[in-house]
Image (cartoon, rainbow, N blue to C red; front, side):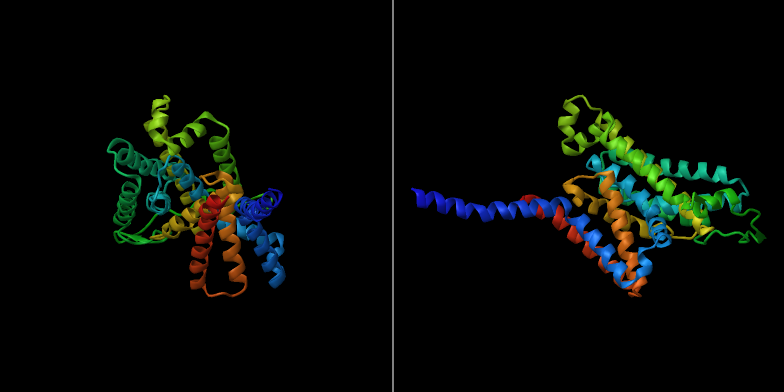
Length: 341
């Protein structure tokens, strides 16, 4: 009896130890990898670990992070906003047209950009909430719809000061106040970084410290149970897409201000990067659900990798592969280690 008990205890110990290690890796693994990468890049390129370069990293991920925050909110209800990148591109073109083609103020361009984001969100709500089209299919359709609309409105051309329209030079230009949104600084910190931080704080409070956030997570967990509990599912799903549309619009405004022109396809890269940041965030502190803190860490994760590889003169085409590898690793951490734990 004693030998059997002893043998059982000995056999169980390795299992408990493996479970404990898996739990630690599940909760802190991504943060450890991020810290290790920062140390490695700093050793290989001392200029990486400087304040100016830290601002460069933060500014490079600000637009991606803002889009990712909106995608995160849409994911809390079990949805998925694939139209976010197209919204960014449409807002870039609309704001550029407002100032360059129609010679209106920067403030008017900001309002037009925000209304464009809400328009995309409204179409998504009509398709997903009213018409009951599955989110992925509906937002994919919206993506193509607004990508094509932006091309039609501009004739497939970029919008820049001095461009020719109907045989005449466009009368407007990007105003200084609008350009400040993309290149200005507040106490040495770039404006996009400040906006990113503020929106991250707002989304964090919304999801973690309000009844709206609890309702969004409840719908994502089980929409029918949430409905039976008295939660107005349709209204909260509409709210989630509205937040996603506004975040994408803010990102588009900042990108337009930074570029100083309306480039065709300017928002194309931001969908995959924002989705990657949101999904990587699932593995931060073992959250295993959409969350603002994880999304911010995910965006920083991508920014650190890209900046470090750039400073090491890695070919640009390798960066996409590395981002994909990081996303796969984060998903393995989030799902496989959770089951082991």
